[in-house]
Image (cartoon, rainbow, N blue to C red; front, side, top):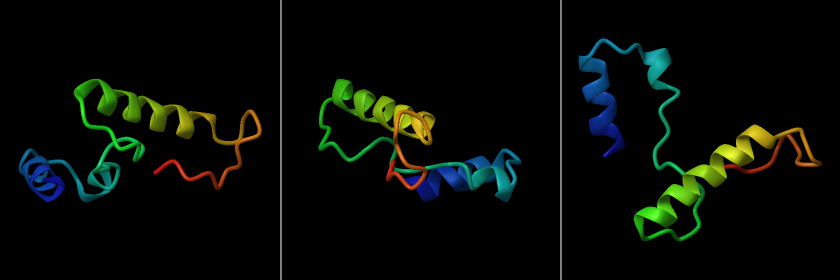
Amino acid sequence: MATALREKLKGFGISVEELAWVKAQAGLDLGAITPDEIALSILAEILCIRSKGQRGLSEEANCA
């Protein structure tokens, strides 16, 4: 699925450098099944990345 998305984005003129920012699968691996759980896993990943270096979370924290 991620490969198809990248190819489609390339077709729209998105550069290889910009495509490097595309991450698939999105969210932390929480075992999410429902749409609500998937949304929560994505928000958790955003919070983890945003919090790196703050509140005692190390820069090496695994937010993937």
